[in-house]
Image (tube, rainbow, N blue to C red; front, side):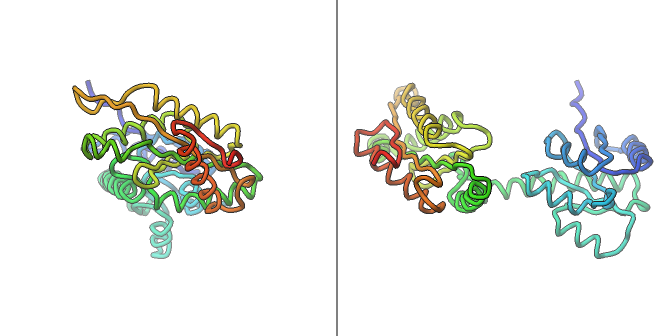
Length: 303
């Protein structure tokens, strides 16, 4: 059974360009794609952000706005879809602006052939995969797959500013695996790695897609909970503690570890007036949770 055709989005306000591109697609030699079309800036942005297309062909001119604006707006909203820029202009300035904005290739409409557009899409997809792999290496922890501390330090000021601007609460929950050093000392670091990966998986499974889960360092994990007040953050923290403790973690056929976590909760702006102060508040609450017997969540206001 043949694999389904991958979807390519064309954003262009010219219906004739859509029909011409369809004809080009039918003459591809190696690849099989399905062409989708958006005729306006707004429709194109919505479809691009939906994430169902493997690549996008984007026209330079889109009514009163242009494709450069669309690339910037899509990137600011987290879009990583590879984009090939289309324009009727041949000026080098447009080429440079498109690449600086984030386009992965550039085609002049009057020069496009089926072979050229097929090659361009293949190149953009391959380069997009490479860039995504590099982005993941730069932002993800290798052991757990969670966001790393460097990415946390980039994200937190942005979320603080967003919470401040819109008047929404922002919560941090800091987790620490209880007696993790004993796990490593008794069963070895490979067993500790397995336990840490499974705890990370269980923690990540308990949060919304809009929240962030970070490996802060060692056996410490942090949740960034957007638009979440203290009761909501405590509820998440206690649920995570319960889910981690509920089932032993199998590290080998003969060994299952009973693992628990402690959690500290801080909330902006009630507990702190900055992101750094919020992190310190959650950290102090975490130490209180450990001092009070572990396997529990404590809020900064409970100190």
